[in-house]
Length: 133
Image (cartoon, rainbow, N blue to C red; front, side, top):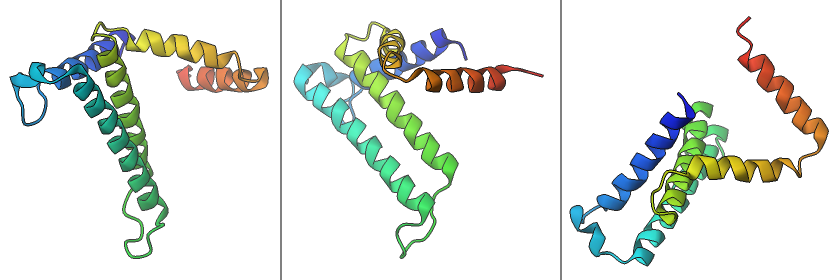
């Protein structure tokens, strides 16, 4: 999937959520901007809770339930958090489609703080992963 496809999907999710608030349908515009933002952040927190539930499930940390999740389910929940955060970012920026560009800029700033040897290791692992041979 191209980055432009990913951006289009994040933007579509964000506008869909803004336009069709649960239980309100197209009346979402009547909600205050502050309430919509609160709903977005609460949804992000809910997704974080699902990650915690999956972690407990994959490790069997609840002896009453045992192992209830797979690593793939935990990873999917982590991605749900990322997508929810990107869609919330879109909401705060007027749904103009810049979340992935902002993420790249943010990552570039974070990269400046990463020790060079870790960037090299990541570069090598990425190259091996992308090498079709």
